Length: 258
Image (cartoon, rainbow, N blue to C red):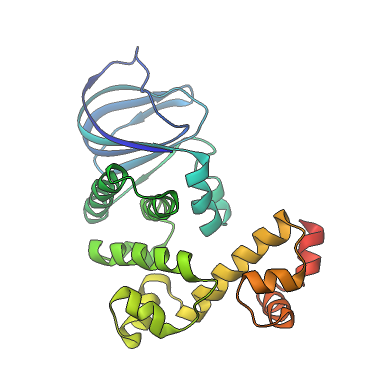
């Protein structure tokens, strides 16, 4: 589902760059030359991140000292799309695009990729790898302004929080629970979440619950009572009112138009 390797050497345009999976990311650490596609040739430069669509053969005419070649499946990519629903995110891999990271941002990206390589080798579960991939894509595409100001340790804490939230959002609501999972007190957790996400814990919890509710409303025929129970709401009325308050339409209306 995901493959990451460090590539280096002299590459000739007559040989395509192979990928294990259809969606691809090329992160340049140090290289000179060109990335060549039917749409044109693109200069390789340190800190440049290429977002490569499923269609299209990739060829390099380059001397590569070090670059990260990452490919992954649509299943892992779906977590990123669920977390980033704006048009810029949805179109990230529609055609070849790239971002140029600053030296500091690039060093953070390299560190995250090195850690991802270790996580892959450790055979971490799919949900964890999906969270990690989503973090790397959000960071390298400069989609989350708050993330860009975080140091590497804080970015790792973001990943830890997302993993805990993903496991317990249906059953746990208290700040104390998530603070304990993060090894922080409640005050420190709230300050960290505000810095990393510009949101507090209740906002993040309900955003995740509503996201899950949308999936259940679209892909199942569960009743409102059943969805409320799955998501840990005490009563169906509580779920229905929270959904309408967040989305601006009722859950039934949302189901009809989707």
